[in-house]
Image 1 (cartoon, rainbow, N blue to C red):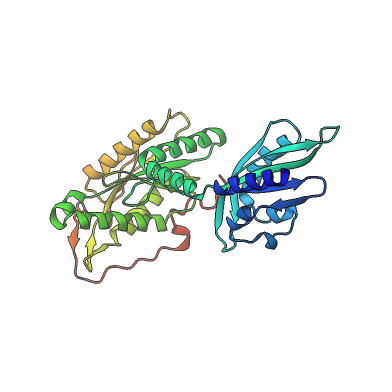
Image 2: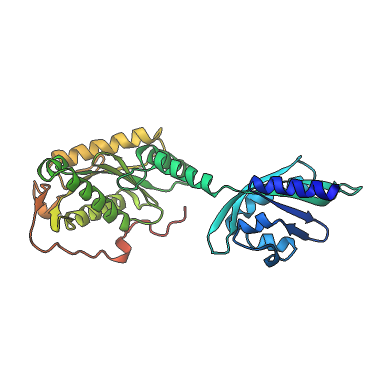
Length: 342
């Protein structure tokens, strides 16, 4: 009768897509149900009846979460154990599982002897959560961070500036005469310019830099570990020059455009993102007012712009071969602050 009850329970659990593990803790022996193995693309006989068979499949980055839940339970500090983590599938991909278990037997001293638990594949749920997070934090056209997430990152960097005395800056970039591009060549061409611009800038930023679309044709870049005002303006000027010399290709033709940039250093006395953004926005306005295709540091005069011209920001079709410009390796993002420890 007991055997029949055990089989019925096993069938019920497997019908609910729940894999079972049974762990003899002192000896390290662990058995796995057929469904536990199959959700990882394996057969039960391929798994040695030992806890190490499970351990080698766990994603290295997930061990801390498992241990923070499992060890207190083994010590008797919690009623049950639960964790979400990744296991390696036989085909090499990672499967997200929800693992729930409980110690069923302890010795007279309270040491754990036997634990039993369930695995459920939650990969679909995790994929949906990731998609929702991406929608909430990024711009769908360019794939860049959105304004809300960017503001949080700037505030986080401001905290590091206060604590460690490091220097960082915010670049506010606005494409010049972007409305003309949309009005003259259509919104599809405008979208292609935005994608080209986003990809171009992304390639020339450091891993620690943060790039976001704040709305329309306005973008933000956070540069941590920058070498003061000079380093910030130098980084902005190099990005401006790169953009001016790298036209987008629309319908097989180069479409030239430029960008104006307002630059603001993060000040330990700043209350938050809005105050920093306001200074960068004022500098951006000055760059636009003095001729566009310029970088202006808040509180300073604008740079001279391309070739010292007053008006170089018009978008235009150009049938000539697009200009190719290679940036030196140390110019990726900026020459300032590369390799700085966060």
